[in-house]
Image (cartoon, rainbow, N blue to C red; front, side):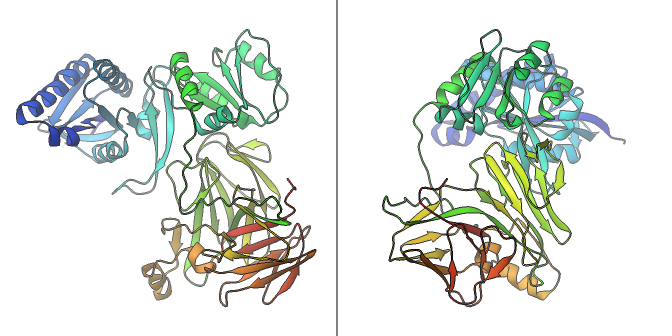
Amino acid sequence: MGTVTRTVAFTDLANYTQKVSRTDREGLRKILADHEQLVQPIVERNGGRIVKNLGDSFMVLFVSATDALRAALEIQHMVTGSGGISIRLAMVTGDVEEIEGDAFGEAVNLAARILAQTPSGEIWFGPGTRVCMNAAEIPWESVGRFRLKGIPGEKEIFRSVPKHKCWLPDPLVQAVRSNNLVRIRRGARPPVLPPDPVILLEGFAPGSPALMDAVDSLPVLNPASLWLSAYNIASEDRNQWTESGRGLVIGTPEALEESLLEATKQITRTSGSDTIVLEVGVQADVELVMCGLALPAVPLSDVVSSYFYDLLPDARWVNRSDRSLLRVEVTPSGTRLQAMANGITVNGRAVPSGDAVDLRDDDEIRTPSGTLRFEATNHTYAGLLLQDTEMRLGVVDGTTAELGREPNHPGLAFPDRRGQDNIRWCPGPRAAKARAHGFTLDRALAGRRQAALHVHGDNLKLTPLHERCATYVLRDGRKGLERADFEIGVNIGDRVVAGTTVVAIRHPDSE
């Protein structure tokens, strides 16, 4: 029997497990019956059929991807109004084989894997559905690239946006909290712009002359600082807006207003093992600033053939993330940047999400989380990605500060990223042994106590502390790295490079 193209959808009672532990058998039967009574008429009204009931989940087939998403949005609307059960939905469009009323195939497996990632109350779908649906009828946005169990490679996953929801992108949340958000509504007089504004255009029809006039009236800005609020938007208008690196906020005006209000609430600050903020003393004479990601050259010691790091919206580098802005991969042939979200530019040219470019010395990379500069070095490192962070340490005259993964006090701690998802291994027993023993670039190339900076007036000395992990200095105004095999003099403006970390030596009052 041949295959046919269908949209496979799963519905799932998101809070079913909790309800099982708190409800008797009669109550559970009612929950499942309510689920079926809610889903079945909507599915049939939109041309779908329920393939099977899996208890707290339904598997449904649709001929049309657009109708499948319309049914999902209708289901979520009904759930929101009922105040009862919580449902998540996931779907994929592709070839399936129908046998005796059941359905099989890769699309079925992928839809089930996406469902496992889908948060409560959301509708996620795969790239096949994204291609086949009528984009002008369905409000949607990307939620990132995911590695799904049993599915080769990474898949970009999308989300349909109900009328009551607007997921505010992180750059807008940060702009609200820093008072840098400028809202420009159609017909209103353009306001005075603050430094480094983030502009949200509201009430404009996508692709309209009024929208273009509004954009043309603004000063020259980083395209990533321009955002358009829209709900339903045709593919041509979407591509025309985003191809230069500008952003979209998908949501109704009412949902957008609610999300902006939520963003103004008090910030709850959290920290983790790789986010350590050290306060700068008011009388510090020298400041050490974590200012970049160092990229060791490959192949590395017959262990690592290539690797990558992902940049998060909060400007942290991690081994791998489903919600990253961009990925930088180092291979023997060079260093390559892949955009994982909209709003990425290299030297002013937009890099659409999913596209990749080779990095060259002095390339400027603009992202929604800030601006980075790529600086090529020498054969030891493929290069440095430079961007100041809030991780810094003030050093008082007459004292010594350590650097490393677990430095003595006072010290500036390097990131210690766990996991090996970002590494591609060389063949052979040496790589197999390193993999088995938990090798990571951060732990293998930098020690717990890596180096120490001694401050005595204008006399700054850097002493390496680790016998095997090398410490380098990048002199201010120079390109090549200088290895510090013993105590050497350093100056304000120099950078210390060790492992995957770059630390700048600064005056406390310098920008």
